[in-house]
Image (tube, rainbow, N blue to C red; front, top):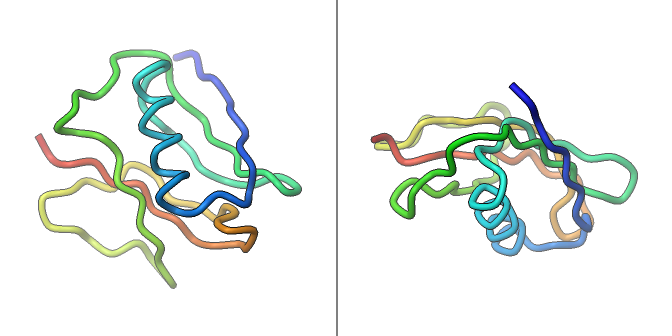
Length: 96
């Protein structure tokens, strides 16, 4: 499947980054990866069906491994920039 890469400033807060991901998912399709390059957070989306309002991405910070979240499915996880610092971020979607 075709994908689209998107970069955003690494200075965004986690809440702002989550909003960017949710907006891009509505425009492009589901997120597949999250990472960073230089001073930017890099996001990859798969072209396709956008999630409905009940299944928007929720971003959470984690330390060693992304924790299981009740009622949520882990979509992707990686190190990116949040508030200008490297952080491990997991993207979860509500289980249908």
